[in-house]
Length: 165
Figure 1 (cartoon, rainbow, N blue to C red):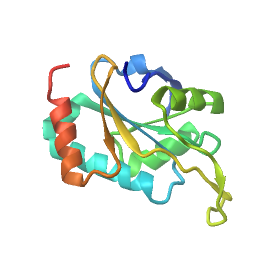
Figure 2: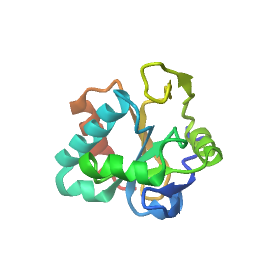
Figure 3: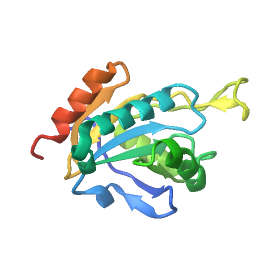
Figure 4: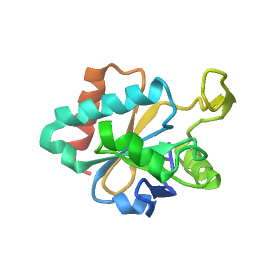
């Protein structure tokens, strides 16, 4: 039994409808987060960007996806603006609350809105901080936890994406 279903039907940050099928043929990393996240998401996106930089030409085999857990604030336009400057390799994915819930269930991701008086909108969305890696056939290959140091994260990603699918 695989640990996750790895399926979704969402909208990319250019407004196009996509599913997991659209990314076949590439290794895919999937991280769930949201654009208003103050610490975990910027750190995770930065770490994955650095890891991809360190992979050199091998990074061309990898498509990083950033799926929002906050579809009420993260429209395609917001996702695009958030990613284009610092994380242009990433494709941001959003959708209706129902679509996001289905994707979260498929990947077994926890995320729940909670009141946060420090946030300008009055809420935050604590969530699972795991980077999933899918092989070119879309099957679960491995996952990389937030607790890994940068060197180990990069080494494990390199080992995974350089193996035969």
